Length: 339
Image (cartoon, rainbow, N blue to C red; front, side, top):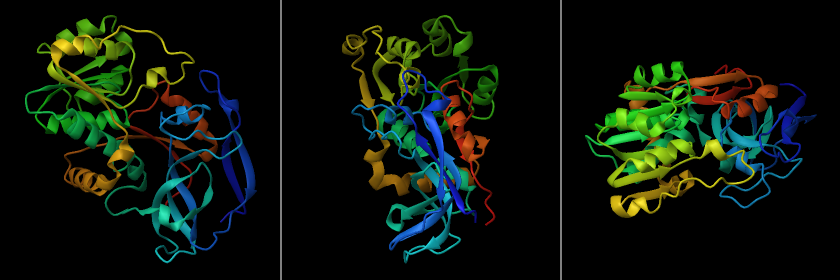
């Protein structure tokens, strides 16, 4: 074990798009776990779009980070020292920990990771928060039925790629928006989407939806917001459902743009719009993880990861989310898993 612990802190609150100087690496001694704590060596950490909201000094569903304090993320790590009766050295665990090489964490805040089932990093993606978000967001809020049309924005990302597959498994026609030719090939090939729409090559999203979803949209799973969402609203069928999961196209905006006002259209369609926050489903997390794990094990659910090597490159991995650089789940590999 190294003697030095690197921790990435929020150096300042960004205006608009964060830059490299938004982050700063600090060095300190490796922490010692106190009573009830364990020392965790980070193997993989997650970077996610919602973290942009935590960089603002504003009320949100996630508590803002303080300037000068460590960034936090979902982390899969190995227990090195334990002062908690549940954990032993060598255990692999999941928790919300620091962007750091090492974190001393409460043993009660951690959950076990089964490395025989999947790679440790999968518990930050398909078997973690993104997978659960897709599972509950689509099946509970979207409530798809066989034969319906499901449209997914951000369809090649961590949540969207899982939504596409669960929707196909439910017997739906699936249309996915993504931002490159390679991502469209991924959607239509590996994930089984009926139609992929490259939004970077599309001038008229409504026309594209008319071609891809000629019978209209029954469920729209929204990860992006903006003009794609405006187009999807305009093509909702009667009793259509909109699941609002994310709005990544607007996270760096300092002001909220006024777009087309769509609520009036819901009168005619009797449509519903529901925002989802994964923590509301915490009592049912085990249910989702067990089902997702079963689908992964039998090959019914596939996943991809974009892996950035090195803790020092975590800021680049985070910033790349807003440029659409990732396919599947973006994770940062901090240390090798030798288990």
